[in-house]
Length: 371
Image (cartoon, rainbow, N blue to C red; front, side, top):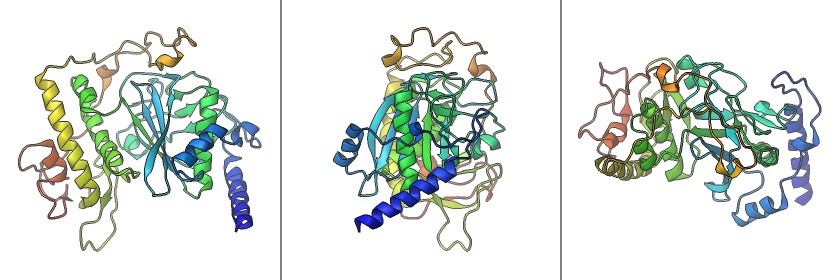
């Protein structure tokens, strides 16, 4: 039994090495895998995995939060749920709060991204790097462009999430090991900040608010189920955990730039997310009633850095060299829905779960559907 497990690990390691060898990034040519890309996880992290009942080769989810300048790694435990593993303070991110729009705007991306083995670069000029896969389907549908948007080392950023070399070594190894477990990809959830009612209330005047509330749907699915949300794109918007309506004769087909097909949100996931959404809405409304101070729309700085690094890397966060980000924001299309009681919860999930919630954006003129 042990010999069989060892043989399987060796075969997977060889396959992973073969997949990574041809990867190029930022002009790098193909090289044999360097030692930094194959090193074992530190002993204390291996002990933490054992303590949290997380198999070494189980899948991961990476979460990025700009304003807090933190990167979280969540890992699947033996029960099949993603649990929090570790927080890494981000050494440097560039741009401002808000999504990346075009090449050269210095914006670090926000959204849901899928990382596959070919996006892992062991020969990076920035120690090690993980390409986020920007632009994704949502970005392309909204005519956004850019390239080489990474999580990498060296603590320098131009549209990336930069870590220290020591940090990216751990994160890279965790990602590599998740592939060795057989998972073909892992998800990165990049957010402007933790999507709490307090943070959304502070940023209520930001023109990105509707985009951030859309991201919060996927965020809530993850936090309430501890399962990686399935992500699709239609009508230039993210759709989470969609499945065909009952008795549907054909599978769902999503076209990122076209109208959404009829679909239902997985009811078990939607119920849990609904409870959180209702509680968050009440808290958000209370904060607005209390007139909680609103954050400025434009920070005036080029990105940020976790306070843990301010003394170590003084002067790396400077005044922005670009126009105020909010001045050139495009508008996303409105969400088509019919709500019975006017609340945000009913808009996303309907007023009852006795029947599946069906979204059919093509069924009628605006507003149309209850997704």
